[in-house]
Image 1 (spheres, one colour):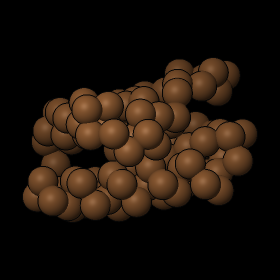
Image 2 (cartoon, one colour):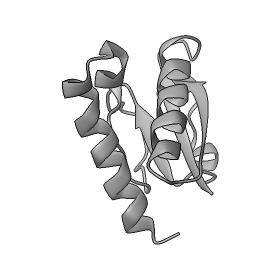
Image 3 (cartoon, one colour):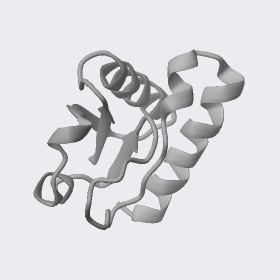
Length: 100
């Protein structure tokens, strides 16, 4: 199982849309992915240590080094395949590099 953390400013709408889209698309590509959604302000080193990949809308300055792959997922929200496909492709490449 690959654990993904999606994040947005409020942790309510956008991050949940990203979470759902990632789970659906990665499942269709044959990966077992579980995603969670949070507010950017709630991200800590301890929280991130529980995840394999971080998918914020855009990469935030959280005040510490993020030691897991980051895939900016904002384009998923536009629901335009030409914009979201590269995000999913980048996410798939990050998953492959995990060797899980």
